[in-house]
Structures are given as structure tokens and as C-alpha cells.
Length: 168
View (cartoon, one colour):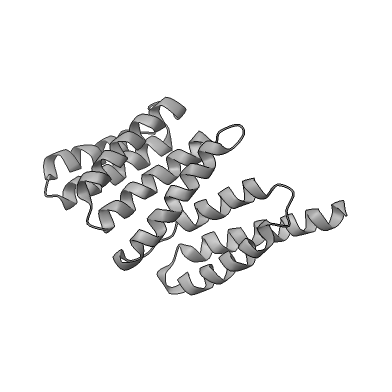
């Protein structure tokens, strides 16, 4: 029935939120994965499964993880980007958020050239979507600054961090 479907959607949304919140802390990563599984099990039963699948992929992409887990989470970011781009209408702002995270995880995997290219593309995309003074643009500059500093390009990295701070 319609009520049961709404109840399942509410439950899936709650589990996805828990997954995202728990995924922000390395100490609760296992619990995040548990709620991932619960939400994943419900997706096929939901009328709006594509939107919930995107939310789950983005929650998985937004994890705080160690370098040893970066490849797995980067794959989730790529999945979130693909789902966001295929959505009707496309959810370009979600794809952009996942693109910044992807660049971060590429850096953690020891792929600096890929990370820098991804982060530069994410900034360009964020400016096109949101305009130059949006917080998503600031996050892109911040992530790029950190990636540049990790490559010992301190002057350019600090300039990116200053650009990030200047966005209000």
C-alpha cells in the first residue's frame, strides 16, 4: 500500500542519515556500514529507489576514512557522480560535491596528478553551478590547497586556502 511504501522510504532515509552521520567518525565506521546494508536492502522495494540510491552513494562518499580505505570510498564517489548525472533532472550539485570528495580520496590513494586534475575540474564545475562565492566553491579551493601542500607546492596551496577563506 501507499502508506507502507512511505514508511519504507522514511526508514530508508533514516538509515541513510545514520550511515552518513556515523561515517563521519573513524570510530563508528563499522556502524555506518551496518546501516548502509539496511538501507541497501530496502532500495529495491522503494518507489523512488533512484533518489535513495543516490543519497546512499553520497553518504558513502562522504566518509572520513584512512588511506587504506580511500579506494573503496573513491569508488562510491564515482558511483554517486554517475547516479547524479543520470538523475532526471541531473543533480549536478550532488555530482560536484562527490567530485570534490573523489579528488580528496585520490590524494589519499597517492594519486596526486589525478587528484589535482579532479579538484580543478570540481572548482570549475562548482563556479558554473553555484557562482564564484558559494561554499561548495570554497570547499573545492580548500581541498585543492591541501592537495597542493601535500605535493610541497606551499605557495600555491596557501593561495588556494586563502581563496577558500575569502569566499563568504
